Amino acid sequence: MEQDLGRPVLIEFWDFCRANSIRTLPYIKAWHERYEGSGLRVIGVHASGFDPSRDPAAVRAAVERLGVRYPVVVDVEHEIWGLYGNLGWPARYLWRQDGRLFEYHYGEGAYDETERAIQELLGVERPLLRPLRPEDAPGAVLAIQTDDVDGPYCGRYEAGGVWAVLDGHGSVTANERTLAVEHPGCYELISHPRSTAGELRLLVSDQVRCYATCFTPGLA
Image (cartoon, rainbow, N blue to C red; front, side):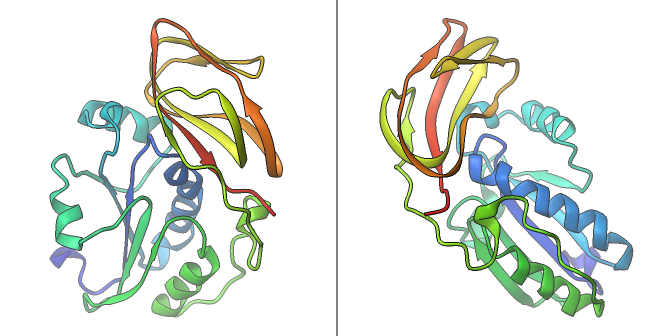
């Protein structure tokens, strides 16, 4: 941070095995592309919450696979996490040019607010990014989704999307849709246009381990 005094810095805590981090990532990447030339520094802090994302080599592979072009610190022992007193994934902290905290946000959403704050610090003004999903639009009303479940899950749920944290090489089948598993990560199994009540039938092949089944919000 001392090397970046004189320009605003956006810090993003994330984990490539967490659905909400993956859903937020396109906005962080876009801000890097849009505002790096105006002086913004973006730094990712990868702090794992699942065993498959604890390996620094797996993080490097995920960064390459996901097309992340800004620096990423692998916070193996959650040391930076502790210094920030961070509360969860994803979390973003926007620092002023003089090293003082200007804005922060936990979880998904508030993308317009963060981009306006970036523009204010940089002294630029341009149209904001369009929402990537209907539930990201300002003022969108979201339904409360089913809580995440450790390991594979079969049963009823209510959500806008269903994800699974997977590792190994093989396949999973969710309600007759089969996906290949070729690397550790969070895989989207089901996507609904709005929050939907459904029943999940998840089959995991012998060569794949499912660490968690996760649910993301949808429009009410």
